Amino acid sequence: MKTALYPGTFDPITNGHISLIKRGLDIFDRVIVAVAKDTPKTTLFSLEERVLLAQNSLKGQSRVSVEAFSGLTVEYALSKGACALLRGLRAVSDFEYEFQLALMNRKLEHKLQTVFLMTDYKWLFISSTIIKSAASQGGSVKGLVPDIVRKRLEEIFAKPAKASEMEPDQLVHAQRC
Image 1 (cartoon, rainbow, N blue to C red):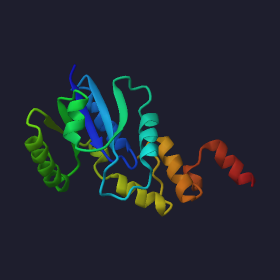
Image 2: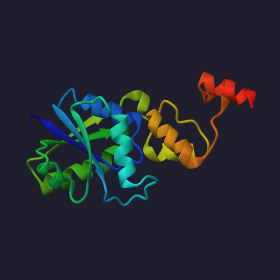
Image 3: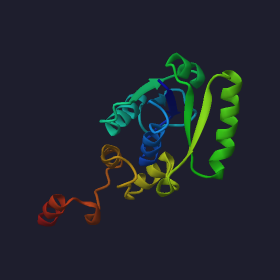
């Protein structure tokens, strides 16, 4: 069985991540989404919440598991029996960083391959950072993240939804108030 490890911060998981995971399943028998505990980034969500949001967003994907991890990615990948690291590329700006990371991982563990997949065109412009920034200012992230993530972002930033983004039953209720 060919297993790929898809490591990242996933703060939060986006539809771009999910698209990449599903496409990874066309190549690999199994994908492990590895949510990093150790990150230089300041995260909005706790490690536990990032794992739960990813797990809930990937329900029904029987060949996908979501796990928290710490330490060296290559060591964790090997401990899980992964033969490859799955990585996404959005633009040229991603390539330089990802290329350096892949080379370092190759130096640390030559048996482990890195497989790059280009992001689907419709997700090219999104990142977790941009999603959080838009949501923090009351912008709609509907359709860019799973609904569970969108709802959690709305709770955190406590911005009421605009009428154009409400479900019909919510809109009727809002109009009555």
